[in-house]
Image: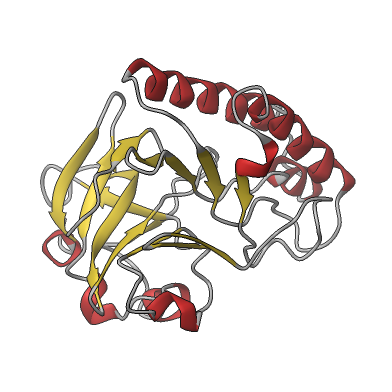
Length: 244
């Protein structure tokens, strides 16, 4: 049975448990672009806080109770140590602590989180029958019979769509969800605004094998939920969008 859930912006909220899951932030992406010679105004942290504020406001407007926030890894971008990433994430934490106790802000470790942020990072987080992980590696606990739902990021899913073949195509961030090995999976898009992600319907041959903890035969049957300007739209299964 698929748990009750709400797609809010680029996050997913589970009302019964009061848990909000947030995908890859990649704090420090701007600094990485700067090092490569691309100059952009440093707005990432302000945008993250603004979006999280709107998401929390929407949860509260629906009379739901926000009890925990789970960041699904790749909180930082650089594989090495960048002091600014730590300082910027601290700003995000300070904002969140105005709405929720720090002990209820769960930080899952991603493959980019090679250096500590001065905070406790865990490999995964379990809440009842739900398993939260980054998605870059397998854990035995994930396949425990008690686990019914797995929530992850890492893949940065998006979808490329066009009205007609040969007409200009547009790429949108999306959620993908479906069943695998008797469990319901939700794979979240990155929270990073600078890039849309990797299209799940026009991917390179080794994309799923390299970036997914779900077998390709199963993931092709996952449903795609495209993030629009004001709502999230169900667009059918990945396999049916491969020629879009």
